[in-house]
Amino acid sequence: ITEVTASNFDNLVPQIEDAIKGAAYISLDTEFTGLIREPDLAPTLFDSPDARYQKLRQTVSSYIICQLGLSAFTPITGKNEYRASVFNFYLCPRSFGIIDPQFSIQSSSIEFLCQNDFDFNKFFYQGVPYVNSVERDAIDQFLENVEAINYPDEKRVQEVFAEVRKWKMQKDSEDTLRVNVPNGTNGQLLAADLRTRFPGLSCDLTPSGCLLLTRGKVTAHDKSTLRDSLVGFTRVFDTLTTSKKPLVGHNLFLDLLLMFHQFHEPLPKSYSRFKAELHALFPVIYDTKHMSLSLRQEADPWIKDVLRAGDLVELYHGLSGITAFFSPQISGGPSAIRAHEAGCDAYATGVVFLKLAHLIATHEISPDVIAPVGPPRPLQWRAHSAAVRQFANRVNLIRAQSHHVSLEGSDPALERPPWLCVETLNGHRSLEDLSRVLARCGAVDIRQLSKSCLLVATGNYGCARDLVSAFRDDKEVRVTKYRRSRRDHGLRAALWSLLVVSATLTSYCVLKLKGTSLAGLPDLGTFKPSWGFGISKQG
Image (cartoon, rainbow, N blue to C red; front, top):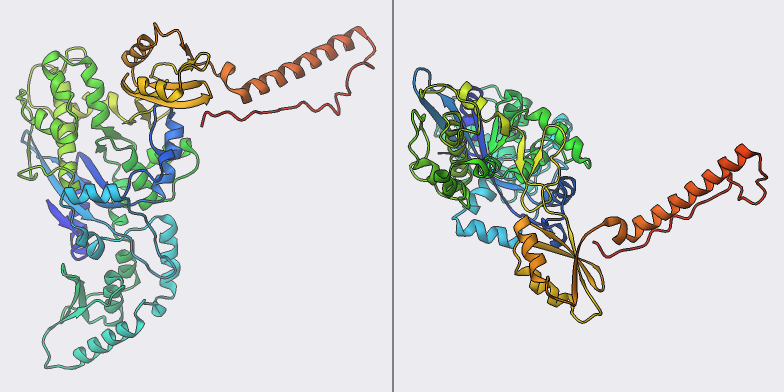
């Protein structure tokens, strides 16, 4: 795995771009500084895809990607083999001009990263910067006045300029000069500024966070170089979007939202607009979580246990242990998988994707999954790609009304059991008592409809049956299917108002046709129906 920080990013960009352009597909994984901004935004079984997007949109505005793994899988000509080029990026936004990004850190997420040996020094001190479209426009305006860069510690930066100027004028001095970056100063920005001010020198940010200047290496540095330094990782994102290569992730809905927001543009309010714009950026996206869950329903018994794996690394090891005829070899990956390091997880995701594609194409999962491709033989990427086409642009959705979203066209019909109303009769059972019983029934989410009624969403039909059975012999509790027209007071008021208006218009038309006097009817030109919506406790 190639580790990428601000100190080596510029030098590695050509290698990264070549790997993307030559790949058959790209797998990604990210680590974030937080997951849920507030309790009301937590995922629930009541969430439609649109509602989930609106929740995550609020979360995405608060947290950032602190590490991104990218693995490019390239078929080797003449061999039944793919070569993986794996990169692990540390990312951190930087201030420049009037742009001063803010982000939040959630304690539970940081504790999780600590448990998995995340290097916070590399994140904060050496993270590669990035921008979205709004910030990129700000860069262009900033560069128009690049001669007037404002640094937090202007006095110390001026001392650095003086030190470099003195060193450059001393002909008998050493060929290199090491300078410490002043506290609070963007090292990338200062390095680019030094290259612009002293065009006869090279200036690079070292892994230790110092600036290393070298004389005798005359390179052309201008405002475009400074712009590239400020744009940072977004250059890689631009290469991904222009290449149009298939993108692969594992349970990646939140990853997609974060990448869109940080590297492209702020998330739109409209869920449908987001899907359309994301599809334009990445026409083909695969989610190995959705693939494994879907295939598990149709797979032969021998592989169901493998596909039932609880997380990515389990799935990776399970599929890696399966021997399939002419399964392609994969080279270039890490010798051992370290869970929750973005680079390792990106590689594991790419391997899982290729293993599943090969098993589907060669009928190893189930003869019913896809039409045969012929006798066992080494397969090219074209065959693997065709085998998984049915899963394209379907992204897993955890704990929601639908199991996945469709990034191309309409979302699938709601797949969970209908909502249930659990109502206590005569006030003999408290809602707290009912909630405790419901919690034992499995995956359920609860909302209070009234002082005596709970609205319950269940994760599957087995759970729904258990819930009904739990109260079947309880004379003090009634379980019914939720009907919004009966329970939603606002909707009922609207329906009654529509009924009144409809009846009035019908009478008006009938009497008008019969020529009957209309004196007894209200003046329709001034008629104002009452739309009295009540306030319910649905949440």
